[in-house]
Length: 301
Length: 284
Image 1 (tube, rainbow over the protein chains, first blue to last red):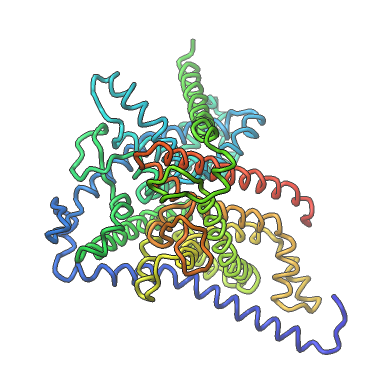
Image 2: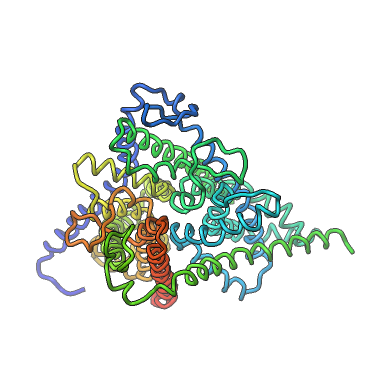
């Protein structure tokens, strides 16, 4: 460091830096509070004369006559999320085991950038892929194969696109979990005569089971909030879906699709902001639980 | 044959297939976007704005969306960097003795990372209404900044966390102030990680559609001030793909190719940075 006769300047600079750091800290910490307050404030107009219970369980969606029932959208969201998790979960678990226990170095070297790139692809590109590949595949092959005539724009299309989107996210957590298992545990089991697969099945998976569950929880909440890609392939029909080949209309798609009209119909904006608030609270809740479980199980190791 | 072995082989085949599914999906996505977009990626496409409206006009290109996206994501990344870097340094240098507080902040950042971008979009809209601003570049930049701050902070935090504590103590004992330690020692040690975090946030900013749907609007022109609505690549794809006119859809496919190329460049260069500068790190 250069010699300075007066170091008042240095300390002043230190103070200024500290002040700016505190500003950044305050801004970042204010964001969640502001999100919650802002969305609550905007949706309060609707909550003033409808109870939250009514809105969530009412099937009537008629904005023009002031009826805002979220039930069809929530059910659609659940369908899409659950089916996507059903597809993604086994693929992630098997791949994580493959990459951490069996694979050669070159497979790892190849798969690492692939997973990273997949994680970086924007959701709208996934949507384009869904329209170009997944939707035609469902209407031309999967549907006829099962003896159904379907348009392809369906819960299944949304779920397939979503599952590929959440795979890198879940996979990265699972790989981390498998890597952090102490080696002694594996060695002890192998030396007792268990095969590699038995060790994985009965010792390693058992050890990190809470972590695996919470990785799936995080993936699920990501799927629950994903908007554009799902919106592009899911069909967007307001009804209560009864199967994976029917179109759906998940909650995020509802918000994104109707921003145009929301200022021209009374209470419509409040309803959409309430939908965003519900989304926020649900996702926050799942994230909170999953992260706590991961932190708790980390401490055990 | 031993039943245990059979079971293991069965699962190993499944594992191999799962891995293949992931790899094939990525190549299928890249291939399908290139296949449908590359033929339409002409010079006119990337050098002119749409003529006669982006949704109905058959002529013109997507220059408005390319420039708009760059404005938006550069602006948001810069703002998020100006807030994110000091915060990440603050956590790892100034607050290093308050473990519980630091872990609490990390936890909040992780939670915010998980919040869907549409929620940020809706929130950005409430801010707009509150302050009475129209859908504009500025509103978009603010919304996207909020959306990428957690990504930026956690990315930088992850590398700053691994700076050995001995460096902090030696730097302080040599008489440097805490902020000098933060910016000259910690930052220098973590440059590759910081660059990676910035690139990652930039990629998120340029690729996200849901957060800017309400806030930036869409226009045929290149914005000349912060208060004008702005076209962006993700929304160019989203809007124009739903058009009944084939020429308009071609613009969407071309925009998808450009967006994907940008994302792939970011992804590759961030790998390059994290490898290349790794050797500058002091190891204990």
